[in-house]
Length: 333
Image (cartoon, rainbow, N blue to C red; front, top):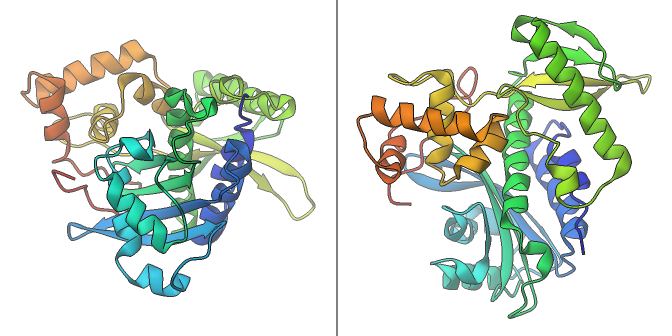
């Protein structure tokens, strides 16, 4: 049965003043949309001094063995998140550290002998893991298309970057549109004619998808994560209830010598294990453009294979605008 992904995308790009509220809203959207009646576990994390730290934890559908505050203060949530690193969308039983996920899941009141989860990784060293248990031995067809869930993870990661920008008061609006796509205000690159055309079409596409509520890939494919490899579109409501669409700068990096900004973005996502196809979706680029950028980056970094490039990529720390928190993922994780 096709899955309605629109509620998840809407939740990912809904802005709040606290990370916990954002995480809960995304988790609440995933449970019914994915058909996860047994509940779900959601966590945001960051790397600090080479250590994985869970920033916030949210779950429902279970009775944990310890209070939430105690669980967050302990290292158990980090032990639960760690097995999902290195994946984007995966079944729990396929994880190399599956037994760790099962043990910690039991502390949270879940049976994780079989599960499905998404890992929305960010090359700045932060990320989101959302998992939910499945009946033992069951792999519903709605999760067979890993590529579709990879793209869901791309939106969750993009939305999390925007949420952090809001929380740190570093949000950069470069264009304001009405719901029909008419540009009301634009500056910088968004003021260029080609960008205005792109943003207008993107706004109209997103609104059309919302109205139709098409299931599955019909809803997620047109809703590109980063329009023009630069912006995310988010809703803003005035006090009188009027709705505007804001194109928010949502860049991963400003460049990392000897790479250009675009090359650094691609290499950073490559280090997360993302395929060329997924990187193209995340940055709103053509797959052929990503291949060229990967090849060019490999030449600049003097490596010959994709595997070597992924290893070198871990040496680069991508920065959010004005230096939001996050450290590079240590090698070997």
